Image 1: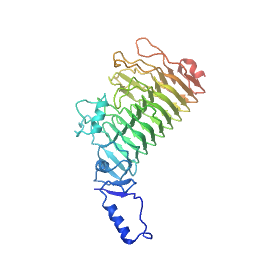
Image 2 (image 1 turned 30 degrees about the horizontal axis):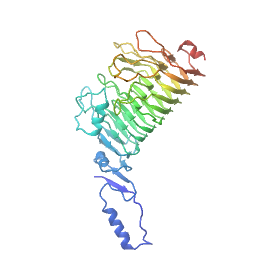
Image 3 (image 1 turned 90 degrees about the vertical axis):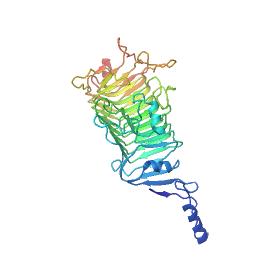
Length: 425
């Protein structure tokens, strides 16, 4: 079904042993069970068109590499408890796809597995009566060693393109994703994360799906140590979504055509693997990003009550955030005919504190903190509508609250702000 190249330790020299010994050693290696590397080594499995990536994953051991030849593979790959490298031949030549679906085509039925069930348990926005909306292109669940995905494309999965949950070491580079409903790339409840050089494009399928939640996301990760760099995201609700996580550098990304370019967000509790934890979101540096013309209109939130458009970057309820040297321009509110006005603050850069809606916090769970200790320096924040910069304040009849301490602005280029004196600094 597929060929594999095994890295062998301890090769026997013809000069020091005899021809008979060499032949015996070769026969011993040949006799190893499929999927087993020679002593101390890892293996490489090559998958070709018409063969199964899932079958290769099932046969592989932690530390192995799966190389996928050019071609299109209609699969949803579930990797449980293993750290693997899954490498394609290029983001536009090795494609992992799912059938077309939407208003005119229902989601294909699927057979249950651990990845689908884990996603179903944690996804409060999914349909609880089916697993067909819980399908990801590649899903790593609780790997026992680092995982890598590179040089491949994912298309059309109703959950995420590439997902890793419960991993220590996640590297996703040089991939492309199109038309996923939740995330293009997501690492959750994970540490030591690198997401770099990927291209993600959302697809608006109309009601009730609209477009995907986020192009790239890190969530529920305390001590994430994340590096999110040099990615391109367009057409999602959120370009980059750093939620309920701590520790990241987000640098050199381009976000355009989303509803919100970058959202650093702290809510009340985790989602993955469950809701038993709270991670104080923040400790993030945003630098050298371009967040331009994120003008889509989104119906968002678990209850579908939020209307969002025209946000370049939002820091919401998070702390210890540096916003330095970014270009945040031309983000403008766009409201389609017949749709409700926005009810989430819009602008180039918005710093937001809000209280959870009454009755939404479980007993004993405290709400998120205020937005606080945010340094905004040397950014170009221009031509955004209605404002270049907005800083939260308590507004009667809303959930908005005052900002916390430690918010500073220095050497930014901006014209219109609230409070007005910010752009004079």
